[in-house]
Length: 114
Image 1 (cartoon, rainbow, N blue to C red):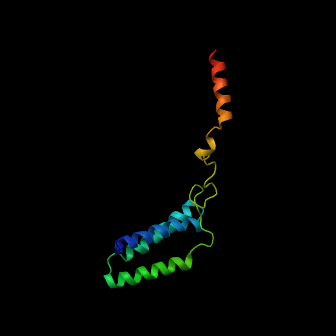
Image 2: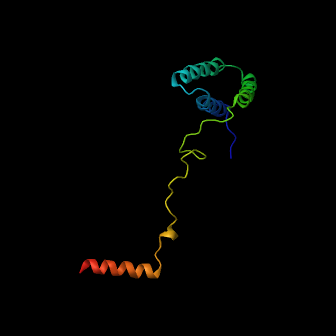
Image 3: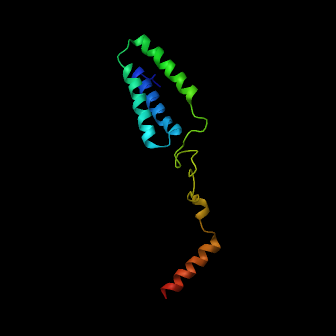
């Protein structure tokens, strides 16, 4: 597997941070203001030298870990969400009829065709 580029790492940190803000700000207007402030912080450093950019990326990752919510918001349908794996269809082997059930079913179908 190839290593990620610096741009990919920054993009992942930004997206992760942006999504994680939803754990702290429930009101969408408050979240939007915080999202714009976050974007300004990233934009302020987009033209820095590569060695400084690597240091800023490490600091950003460390700050993310420090500010991580203890109980982050998880979409209900996402893995570990409250609706994850609810009402799963039964496995196919459970739906197979036994010979007695098949005989009964065939008799019912034949009776209905008379």
